[in-house]
Length: 493
Image (cartoon, rainbow, N blue to C red; front, side):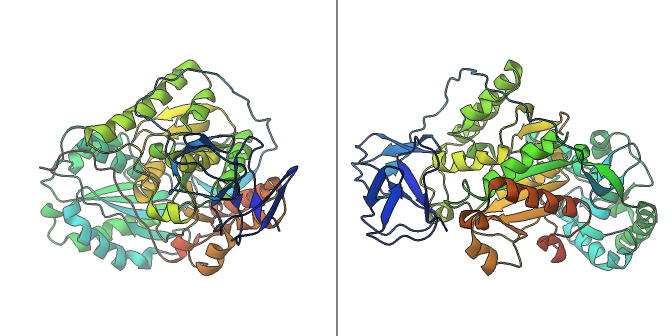
């Protein structure tokens, strides 16, 4: 088993793949050194003397600046490294695009919807238009569990605190996210539950939903019902009868849309789990499929790699706006752009936002960027897409689902039990997490440091995702979890 790794020949730091005691002898090619202090798993140590104000290089790119002289063999972390990032930047397009070679077609067992859309689940969803009816939605969900039978796989309510007392773009975003979820093909039937006096009421929301099948989508205004729970259950009976007519059938992976997100990262995220997801993304795209990368603040410091992979200059300009608009969002609220990584990230070995971002963007693989999406916008282009959303786990995962993702791949070095509106696959970066939180973790990439190749792990992971798309439940689904969160961006009245 390897116990340390120099990711790129250009790097002046290496990463401990296991806890390394002081005095450990390190041999990397012609380089030999002794560790001056204990290095925790996932943390970095210097491979040479690094002068004060010199760049710290990891992944072949700068991840920060030395605050002081760092001697060879010393621990490199937040105590002696700072961010090297500035605020708004000017970028130059240096096109570096390579297209993956097509690979043989693969199929999953999915649901073909009326109109041609494809789903990987056949669920009944209860979507409140406003937070005032959240408890009613939850009560209906509990009483409707009897409808889970045959090909109807779950009944889930999605409470949220919005839909009223919002203004401008903030209200528009709520309406668009709700409409996108109502139209999501993982739902075989949807009950839209309104109050009756909210800003984003059912009549308004219908304009965002567009054309819909009245057998699949039904509406209930609680203020107009004598007994809203009884009437809701009657409507759900009809929805279940319709949804139950769908059966799984073979569908090409070219129709899969997969969201990619990470949270609670550690020093192994960019070495094990994120590269595995990136290799998966390239493989799915080689079969004609689609992936979506989000959490824009965790692109800061690695954004030029994504920009240069844009298929054309228009996409490059859109990616520049994606990055700088999010920085302006931070500044408009008087917040520091680079107030990241989190305490958990730091404990796991991530020292700066550049460090985190370089690991985070490994999930994008090497394919060209073919689409750039605003928050609430749905994917149109096959291949790799970038989506505007924050790093917050629930908000970003909901945004991926609303953009059209059938499944969200969520890599983590710390672990989390949350779900999203679609199956959310938890992928551990290290073995300890997978063993300790087996009730949360669906797939372990920590084995990569023990041997085997990235290609082998990618193929194993691809097979697993196909099984999830074909109906195998992930851990959060088995626990009965369904979560959603909307990006709050404006004034509350």
